Image (tube, rainbow, N blue to C red):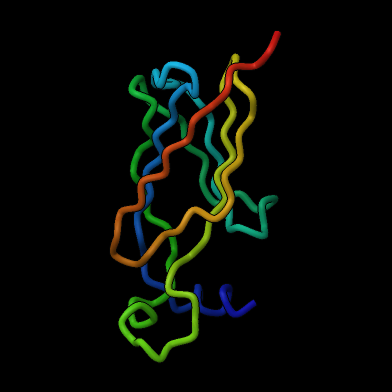
Length: 118
């Protein structure tokens, strides 16, 4: 609950997702991405789709106040944690929990998807 309280007076950070095949590292275009707070996966905050290079657009997300990162005596978590759920035709659904977003920083989350056994 402290995290949600911190989000009420939050800063913003950026996130971009890169999706590739786990076998050949080729980009996965037209993948559907859902982003939620870690611990609340049923509450989707953003929905994105990858482009032909397997990348999502860069989005802004809430992050704790930057002061949390600058004060060495601070005991609050200085980053927000998000869960990324990815679906793409021909691939196993993939979920990554705990993607960290810091205020004023662009996070890059790589996702490798396994081909679905037919």
